[in-house]
Amino acid sequence: MLNAIGGVELTSVAKGLQAADAMLKTSNIKLLLSRSVCPGKYVVLLAGDVGDVKAAVDAGSAIAGHALVDSFVVPNIHPEVFPAIEGTNVVEALEALGVIEAFSVSALIEAADAAVKAGTVKLLEIRLAMALGGKAFVTMTGSVAAVETAVAAGAAVVGKKGLLVEKVVIPQPRQELLREII
Image (cartoon, rainbow, N blue to C red; front, side, top):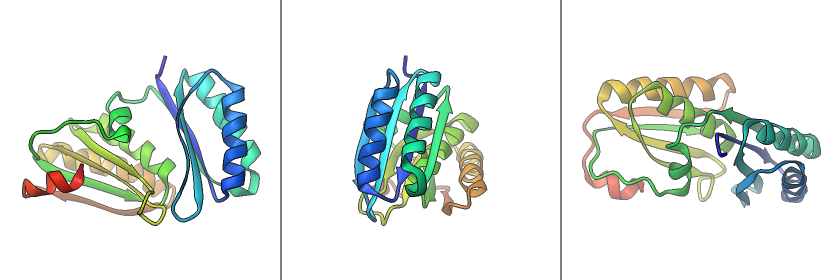
């Protein structure tokens, strides 16, 4: 059952591959992503049962050692997070637009989950570090109040780690932005 997501983010591609291997050998998990990202970091994301994900993340973090940038486990992941990572969420029109930007892929995924649980919003996309200088961001839409609540909750998660780049809420975005976001 895919009820948790977790991952590790490393400063080394070599250690990233080693950590990914250890994580896959540790537990019965589904590999979502294992790749190098800008600027020379490596990210491993996986999903599965909470206990299996935690065991895999612990194993990957141990292997990573000094190369570990961040790690996370989110139990009871909101079902909108997976399609947002995969870029498969469909939205016909924008209401208010919220954006949370972070220096860490791991922290951003935690923030996206917190945001969608805090406000009645639709996640548009979670973009992970490619062509972003190692940063990541999540976009969401909903009523102004819901987006403000969601952005505040997600930004608080990233802010606690000191990895928040920026957060914005655009009350009445032009609809042309939708095609630029997804």
